[in-house]
Image: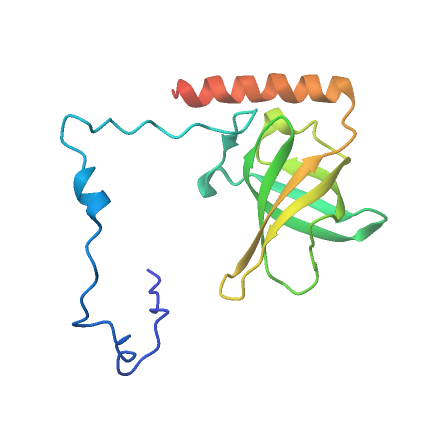
Length: 172
């Protein structure tokens, strides 16, 4: 089991802000408009802003995507697939110092391994839309949008995602 260290610095607590013991004026408007139990409304569930529902993959699923930089087939980038939708894919890769991934880079999705319904996804141009690469993380997270996918490839992807969704809703 991994242990995590606190991000706070060791040693004494930082000095107090000097606000202790100070009096602050009351807000009469807040006192007048304090909500009663009758005024409280139940919280609404947050709405999904995405147009397409994602299919999530766990570490146990072991779904791997292999990428290369466009024009450089010698450097393969092995990534774990975190989720997938009709328009793109979210990934995680180990930091190895070779990749230098940046938003806007064009990558070629060479293949997806570990999810047979997605094996047709080969040699598809993608563009990195965002990268999460903090120094305290051991992996890089990034999201790619599919570019110029042929209509028949898009139909195959739509059908595969429908089948995967049905499978995840009805586990056997």
